[in-house]
Length: 315
Image (cartoon, rainbow, N blue to C red; front, side, top):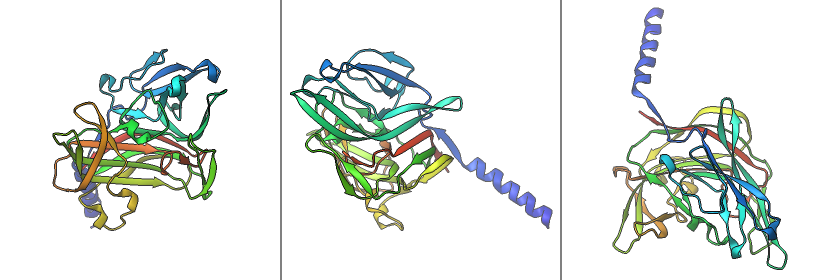
């Protein structure tokens, strides 16, 4: 009997392993980066600041917008070349960090300062993020930051999980910093957490260039405490259909209201999620990692998130 149980268990493992397929998300091992050296304006001190883009191994020494999608790379970051009022500035909250024989993506929550005598004195909070899509450069101001992120890439499959490696430093303090170009930094009450999510959407565009979507699949996870060592092969389940009626639903998992995309005319427009449809074929996928979960310009300074080896699991 014991021998039979052992054989049965081994057979079950073999059948399970055959039923599961794991695919790497393109460029999701974060081993390849482009380094952009941005020369900041003399009014800001004239320093040269490196900005990192996930993509082909390359070096760019020009103050110009980055061209996303090189060699099929689907990722962008919150790192930005900015040019407010004609002043060149670089903002870097995401960087590669050595891990074993390769690299991972490191995201930080920090304050960015732009000071030019007689012209501007701006401090903004920046939460590092890595996402599928594009960042629209040059950034001319700190207004409407979500309009500068073209979120999502074409995708038609139906995975069961998103898998990745991570570690993080998340402060237990129930405070965070609010800082925009319009106000001095202030401390507010609330707990900032890192987050990872995947959204599968069925999108379409009307004759006026408006873009709509039905939510097909949803996977969310919040990092609410420090994980000082690497957690490998961590999985976020993807739930299909109307998750607002499913057990464990949280409000932040619901339909998006701040997402922007580029339409067929090349214009950035709001993406209007108008409902759920478990049976619809996905047309696009958004994967988003961020060191913070607060709205733009809000976050706990010092929080840090590391991500590596992003994959999709199929059953």
